[in-house]
Length: 164
Image (tube, rainbow, N blue to C red; front, side, top):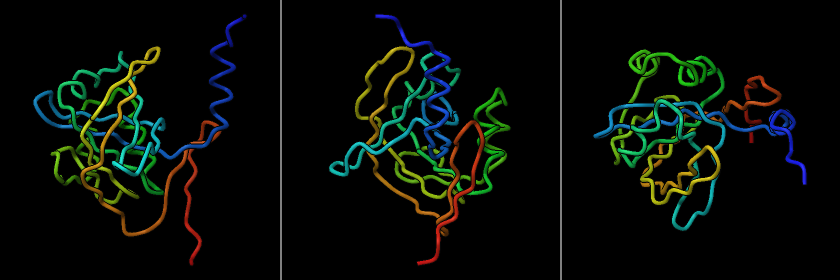
C-alpha cells in the first residue's frame, strides 16, 4: 500500500480548525514555551488533556525534565503571542511579551488567556516524530470573556461567543 504523501496530509489538516495554545513549563529543566494546536480533552475523570510535542523541538528537554506544563488557550487578539512562541524568538523575549502568574505546578499561566490548564504530565506515548503528553489538570484559570483564537486554513481567526 502506498504511503499518503506528507503534503496531502498537511493540506488536509489545514482544514481542521483548532484552538491555538501557548504551552509553558518551568522547573529544573528551565522555563520554556511553544505554540501548539495539537491539544484536546481526553477525559474529565481524572481531568486530562493531551498535548503533542515534537521530540526535535528546542523546548523538548525542558518539558521532559520538568514534568509539568500549562496549556494556555489564547484569546481573540493574541495572535502575536502565538507567533513569538511558535518561532525562533529567544525564550526571555517570548515570556516578556505576556503577563504571567503561577498556580499549583509552577508552570507559567498566561494572564488574559481564554482558559489555562495547570497540569502534571501523567503519561507519555511516542508516535512518529512526536511525544503525546497526557496531562492531568490540577488547577484551572478561566478568562474573563469567552473570546478565543483558532487556526484554520493556515490563518488565525478570532472567535467571539454570542451573548446568551
